Length: 248
Image (cartoon, rainbow, N blue to C red; front, side, top):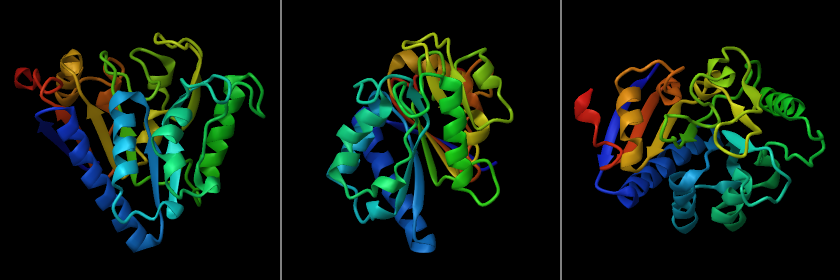
């Protein structure tokens, strides 16, 4: 696996500004080299704030040549404001020239796959497989991740079947400890298919989990510890989130 970097910033805005600059650099470099780029978006306050920053200043990104995926989704009806895709649309996707056929949304509970999250998860796994020549998923350029106070990423919660999944790229979660209980999520094997895994974490309430993950905790205990990119893993932290790092 690639190098891990821990970057500390004075506040959440400085964190977002730094991630914005690096996001533009990685995506435009990929487009120059291959003609396109692929990114996995995340929800949460800091993740959505980054998307809003990209709406205002995305540099020379050609959004028509970016494949957009989602790390997880709340299995709610289409259009529900709690769905990550709806928040991403409002923050960024409705405001840039992204190609509709290159935005790969996870199914809603009222979608074509019905109300069965297992079927919806399998359908998204098939989408990912179809976008790769032979592997279960594409090799994403960037996978953006937020993190919960107990260390969860996507909808991979501590001591859950989902975080322990070693083979499937997408699974259904029907007992999330954070509402709503039913979700669809990429797994750690899918996260690790990304060249660059970026964890955007702000707030002192997450400091213990950050310290544990950076210090080498087991992913079953602290799921974010298992989020590793093939080229790089970068922790973007504000002062609060980084405040317990001296303890590791």
